[in-house]
Image 1 (cartoon, rainbow, N blue to C red):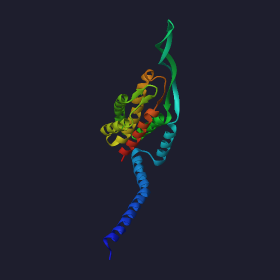
Image 2: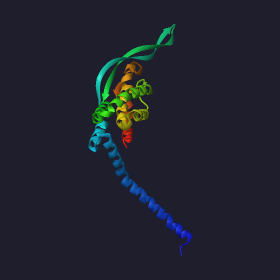
Image 3: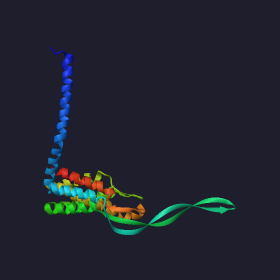
Length: 234
């Protein structure tokens, strides 16, 4: 005869074993499910697995490579304190001096060159997406221009999730069946143009910095834009 206590002792280990088995199967099969979903998205996106892996690898490695394209002298105001003596007493006198420092503008290989090359490839593979993409780029660029902020001594900083969200919304509205391509092209190029290129006139406000187009301040946004555009391909 099975008592309630013995039944409880039997049920709990069984439930625990089933739970462990479930998570074990999930760990085994989840990567294959994700790979299958990504493969489907890539096929709709016009990419093969091999080209995707190569692009991802080159982009991540290329994010550490900045190609200098322009050097300029930037005036930076420096606050100093000088002392004057009057009748034997020392008095501090705050002064402002102008110091000229070199500012370097570079293009990030992984965050600017690679996304532009992929955008051109996607438009060549999906020519019907060219017109909506050209219409979406100015919209995304304008929004990201106001979203990005020049930070003194740092460079241009773009909120992480704004580029992919804006690109996805504009891509869905204007792209129709080609929304993944439109979202990626408009999101990446719009981020480079609106967040970086249109703020080049703010170099004096940022002080002497090494500004990287498509670099650390915008690379994450561009990368997330690509991931979200791939999700739209389902």
